[in-house]
Length: 249
Image 1 (tube, rainbow, N blue to C red):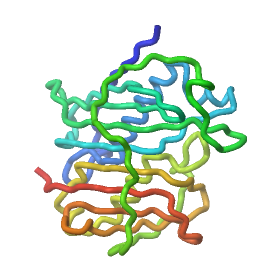
Image 2 (cartoon, rainbow, N blue to C red; image 1 turned 45 degrees about the vertical axis):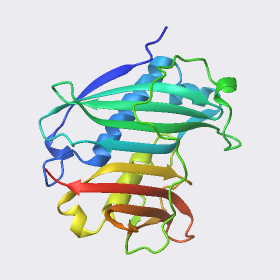
Image 3 (spheres, helix red, strand yellow; image 1 turned 30 degrees about the vertical axis):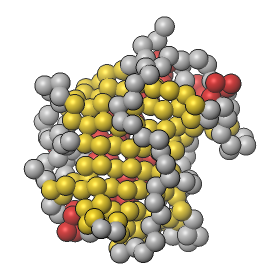
Image 4 (cartoon, rainbow, N blue to C red; image 1 turned 45 degrees about the horizontal axis):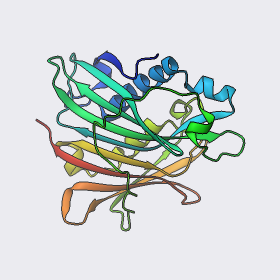
């Protein structure tokens, strides 16, 4: 039987860090995605395998919580596993460990399987091959709907680039975190890091689109931001984010 856990180690390279010398959040999320993707191949439920069945994976939620970001030259281990299946959703969790084996981050994600023809989710137990679970949650989250941003304080408009696309030909889920962080006010972005990132995906973006990333502080907490990513022309909401920032140490 396939191993329900996978561990991979990443060497943090110079071009993957920010101006503080810390691993960029978007790169960290790409590490998680890479490890998850490799694991699905081992489990027989990869995107390639699902496409043979007329299906594909789509992420619906991501929640990342860091105690610290690793720095340039450091080794980071990513440990991942599928934790549970519930109806149309599969939960995959992660632990991030430093070179001493100390857990410095945790993440949990929720995934659905879409029928490529109908573009509707299917019941995973009915359509996917069976795969083993490791029934442990690294980060407890019931994935309640994220708050809606009502009164944005800042906005940034950006094009969707070819390099933003994934195998499904829509914007890779890691890109949304970068879009959200880009709209953060300078008072936070210059001296703080987003130690907690929650993302709720609501619609797809494609090459040729332009998006607007909007942001404002959550009421009563200047270090907690609400974000809205929307289609620049139609105003269609593509994603919601909530980020919590702490000073760089």
